[in-house]
Image 1 (tube, rainbow, N blue to C red):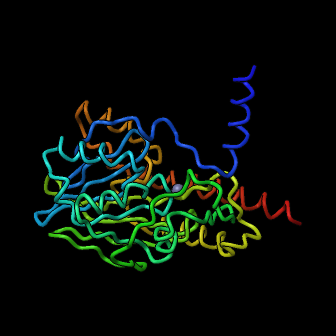
Image 2 (spheres, rainbow, N blue to C red):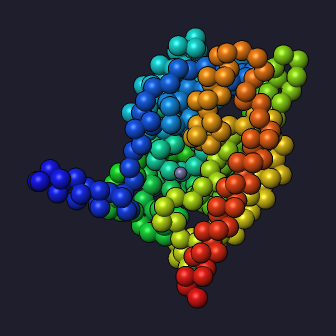
Amino acid sequence: MFRLLIFLFLLVFSGGAMAQEAPDWTNPFPPYRIIGNIYYVGSQGLASYLITTPQGNILINSNLEKSVPMIRGSIEKLGFRFSDTKILLISHAHWDHCSGSAAVKELTGAKYMVMDADVPEIEAGGKVDFGRGIKSGDSAASQYQPTKVDRVLHDGDEVRLGDTVLVAHLTPGHTKGTTTWTMKVADAGKTYNVVIVGSPNLNPGYKLVNNALYPQIASDYERMFRVMKSLPCDIFLGAHGDYYGMQAKFARMKEGGPNPFIDPEGYKSYIAEREGTFRAEWAKQKAAVQ
Ligand SMILES: [Zn+2]
């Protein structure tokens, strides 16, 4: 009975403002080449990408602090050196994608490049939850080590290393500086447009109406969907594998045949479905305050 009470207590007090770790975030996943010079080095639930070039490598998403040794192991299993990581990028300033950044910087000397509107959050270590419109001072679980940003990015900026050019698209709403990365990748004589989705999602408790800490949140979501729909996409990737059915596609890739990560239709239908969910929630919240 006592245990049950503790369980209920934890359930009540952790389900609200406090961030919770999903079990698949720390489950290992085999590293693999997605296409061209793009590799998957994340866990089952948290995506990290390694983009290799002759001048060193780019890592997208450092994930949790405890993910860093796993990411390093994945990079080494693929035959690359962790110390060759020259640039560190993120999908957005939430703890599940950026808590390991301080460790990655320290271990590799990589330059940390973050979208302007996410920089204050990164350098404060996740003190504000804009979406919920709350200071998350008492929700220590969603905070991380404040990390110095080496280059502040603006919408449309290019990140270049070797022969690779990544473009940073501001796709705000989920956080003020959520970033969708695009690049071109060459594979077997063809060139493909890659889109790494930052996040089109509403977290539980997100306030789209009367959000004092993020007044323009709803119009930012609208802007984000406009940008997402304008991006040409052949290779559909994102901050979490479940955006694009990563595990099922990996299984199909192992069977051979056409590369399952080439999925322009999957991208379009995912964005359309997410926009529908956003618009329904926004309408519900607007109706509730009238
Ligand atoms: Zn997030």
